[in-house]
Image (cartoon, rainbow, N blue to C red):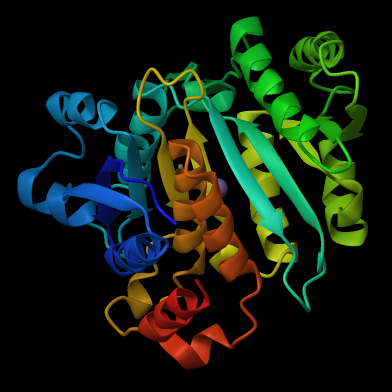
Length: 340
Ligand code: IPM
Ligand code: MN
């Protein structure tokens, strides 16, 4: 079972159902025999409303030093007008991605029984610090009839290459090693050209990996009609954001989708979070589905080097054949722990 080592993990429960699902994930990790020393950080909507800030510099620096960060969900309730739209997402989640240089967003999908992707295993490796998310652009003459808004997409060789190399490493580890670049090279010619050349170059280091290319619009069809074709999809920040919601949906729903915001170079703590949001409407009712948070914790265990425990937790989630809604958060957690 577990090792004698224990890991220092920062826990940001966040808003809505976030604290409930992270608590469930931590209980499952403990049952898998891995010892964590956790420190809770109260960040998110409640903190912003009380103290007027989202994430201060000193806290960001503290978070950098942990072995990992586990995050539940951040975001205001729908219709809560006290918090400007996007403020928490940019101020916390994106700030952590950029500040800790979490340059890969790794999102594995396992099609659950009855889903369009039933039985399929594939992953999206999304570049996580560039593209349109880098914030290049601006507004001129705002509010006038001559107003201009530009929103650029940043693609650096350094950034693309390190993401693509990570994707190839993942692809090389598959039973059937294959990697698909998803882009829009027919229209986004400058960025598409860079991505294509980098993939062709890095492919030389991974001769066992079969390499393919799909336009992003075609990939939307294939994900629905033929998801089995995919092993690892590598793509830019915005395409990866959109495609991973579609991939979650065809794999059984966003309630299962896990993600790892990784700094593979380990110059800052990596961050693990379910793809779903805060779901304020069911917070505190005991009905939140913890499976995505538990899967995210399995990715955290993998990153910490606890491969055996990571596999056991991931398998317990994958084989979950009981109706989640009828069991509730605690019931699902207990069931997972029994399975371990
Ligand atoms: C995601 C989310 C974020 C993103 C939002 C909350 C900023 O949608 O993690 O996929 O766009 O990356
Ligand atoms: Mn998203």
